[in-house]
Amino acid sequence: MAKLTCASCETRGEVDLRPGEGAFDIRGRWPDGNRPVVKCNSCEHGLVVQPRFDFMIWWPKTLVIPEETWRRMQRQWREQVELRCRQCGKTFTTERSLQDHMTAKHGLDSSGEQPRA
Image 1: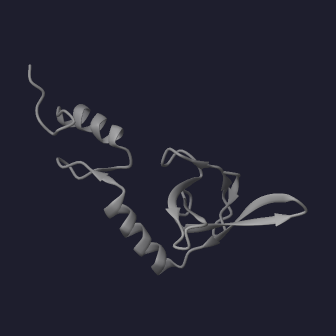
Image 2: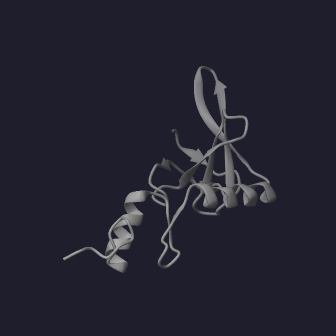
């Protein structure tokens, strides 16, 4: 994806597939299914990425998602996408990071059991 500029705080940067690593995190698609939704890691606002075409050049514009709509979307994201450690409640966005956490912090294997010696 091209560089984006946040319509709320004007942060400029790229979308990174690793959550929290870039200026923006991917959060799925707008209900029409055509436009990506991202979260600005600077101001935490939700943004819809709107493509624009001008003189054969493509560049995206971001539109701020209304606050109440963004809260509902964030709640749905947490319930459906984030993974939660059963021991301490910490959330993760990849299965691998959850497994690494369980092993390092709680001494458990991926099934949540103590490893056998």
